[in-house]
Structures are given as C-alpha cells and as structure tokens.
Amino acid sequence: MSLLVDDLHVHYRTLSGDVQAVDGVSFGIADGEIMGLAGESGCGKSTLGNSLIALTGRMRYVAGTVELDGEELPIGVPDKMVPYRFRSVSLIPQYAMSALNPTRKIGKLTTELLRSRHVDPRAVLPEMVRRLELVQLSSDILDRYPIELSGGMKQRTVMVLSTLLNPSLLIADEITSALDVSTQKAVAEMLVEFRTRGFVKSMIVITHDLSILYQIADTIMIMYAGMMAERASANTIVAAPRHPYTKMLIASLPETGVRFDESRLAGIQGRPPSLLGPPRGCRFRERCPVAYERCAEVPPVIEVAPGHLVACWRAG
Ligand SMILES: Nc1ncnc2c1ncn2[C@@H]1O[C@H](COP(=O)(O)OP(=O)(O)OP(=O)(O)O)[C@@H](O)[C@H]1O
Ligand code: SF4
Ligand SMILES: [Mg+2]
Image 1 (cartoon, rainbow, N blue to C red):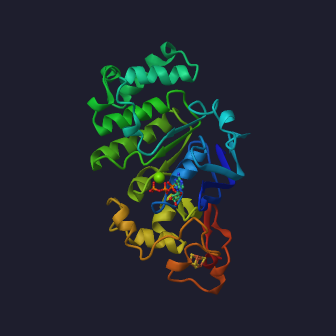
Image 2 (cartoon, rainbow, N blue to C red; image 1 turned 90 degrees about the vertical axis):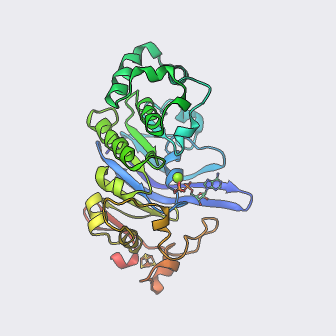
Image 3 (cartoon, protein in one colour; image 1 turned 135 degrees about the horizontal axis):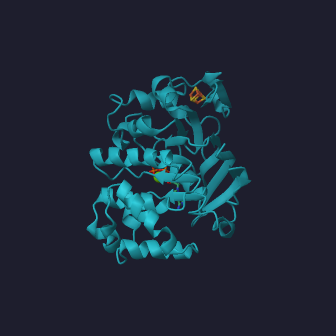
C-alpha cells in the first residue's frame, strides 16, 4: 500500500464555529494506483488533498493518521511536513496555473523552487528538459514568462515541475478544469504516462469531470459533504454504483465520455448541507430518494464486494 488514510478529520476554524470539511475519511491507495476523487463543489476534495501536504490558513488537523510507504506523515505539524513536500508528496493545487508568479521566468521559478528544497538545480536540469520534451514542450519555455504560455502549456509545465523529484504520491487538483476538451484529454493522458514511467508512484486526481476519471483512474472515491460516500474501481462506479448519491451522479451524465460539470451536478435536486454544524445521521438524507428512519443515524461503511465500499444503510 502506498498511502493509508485512517479516519481523517480536518476542519476550518471560523468565527461561527468549525467547518467539518473532511470528517472521518478512510481509504488506501495501492502502489501504482491512480485514484480519482469526485463529488459536488464544497464536499471537501481540495481540503482532503491539501491536508496531505500542508495545513494552511484556518485549516485545523483534528484527528486521524496518514501513512505513506509505511511511514506516518506528521500532517498535523506543518514544520515537520516540510521535508516530505515535493520529495515524497507533491501537490498541483487547484488554480495552480494562475498561481505561477508572473514576474519570474519559468527557469527562474524552477531554480528558486529547487533551491528552497536544497536541491542543486544543475543536477536536475537535464532531466527537467527531457521531461519537458516528453510533454511536448521545448526547453525554450524556461526562458519565458508564465503569461507567454497557453493554459495547456502552463499546466504541463506545472506537472513536470511538481514531479521532478519523483514523489511517491502526486495530488492533482482540478488540473484539467480550465482547459479545452482536447487539451484536457492530452493532460490527463500525460498523468498516466508519468505513472507508467515511474515519475510518481501513485496519484490522487481530483476533478468534477467523471468522464476524465473514467478514462484514467483505476479507482474512484466519491465524497459527499465531507465524508466518503462510495469507493470502488472506476468501472464499478460508472457501471454498477451502489450509493444513491453516486447513482444520481452517474444518471446525470448524458453518456460516458461527455463532459460532466457543475451544471450537471446541480441537476440533483437540493443542496448539500452546511458543513458548519452538519445534520446528524446520513448527510445525504435530505436529498436521498430512498431515505428511511434508520438514516437518522450515520451509516456504516460496508464492503459490498472486495474493494467496493459504500456508506449507506441500504447497501447492507
Ligand atoms: N478557508 C476556509 N474557511 C472556511 N471554510 C472553508 C475554507 N475553505 C473551504 N471551506 C469550506 O470547506 C468545505 C470544503 O471545501 P473544499 O474547497 O475542500 O471543497 P471542494 O470539494 O474542493 O470544492 P470545489 O469542487 O468547489 O473545488 C466547503 O464547505 C467550503 O466552504
Ligand atoms: S444512508 Fe439512507 S439517506 Fe443515506 S444514502 Fe443511504 S438510504 Fe440514502
Ligand atoms: Mg476544490
């Protein structure tokens, strides 16, 4: 097992109380596995991804453990996470493309990043150039400003940069969302190529786009309101989902291979509950067409088949 997350709770501290953005999530990722992470906006995908790298701002580690390659990550202690970041776990954050410093050329950005991690840029530059070529970028881009690159070029650059030290785990957060459909496909295929070539061992790919996940992910985890709803192989999630929420998500896809975006997700009636004091019991209860009395209690996670986990009373 590459990654083992056990009963992770990560909240945001606000003046009105704690936002329970990740509330008791457990899962494992095998060596070489690409796990897709999907669910409606605000369900806690980015919080989960970010918490495996660095707690920022109002984020607060509450409970749970994270093991990477058999070693526990000190995710609750930001300073202690520094040596792991970029080397063992790397994140391409949501909106990474627009976060590139516009006043620095790509080469300078790279050098600064490597130096901040005590890596001699000269030692990895040849490999960087080789990998840029692999993603169809010439080394000329090192001498260009981010603004001179297209969205797809920037995203490929960020992918190469964030995996330069061959991290064990890469978390890619919505890296295809701002791209046109053909560029999306190319970027998604490059992620798979990075795994195949061993630039990263395993991956968490966060996206709203289930059709992208269906193409590239081995497994898919669906989150709802800070918790896991269902996790199974990509085929099972698409062809034989068991959680009512997953079923509705899949049913709202016009057909596999068609883009799945926020407007589609909004096709499910109602809204997710507030994570500031969420309701007791199953958090999907208000919107669930098959809810019954028992759903007033939190449903257990049931393994309905090997590797197929469902958090629903009806699944039992
Ligand atoms: N800095 C913050 N302070 C307080 N609450 C926050 C903060 N950041 C996120 N949240 C809340 O935490 C919950 C989870 O947010 P998160 O960004 O992880 O969701 P997401 O699934 O990544 O959504 P999206 O698909 O829109 O990127 C949401 O309810 C959000 O409002
Ligand atoms: S536990 Fe109940 S409310 Fe929740 S998804 Fe299952 S049937 Fe619906
Ligand atoms: Mg997000």
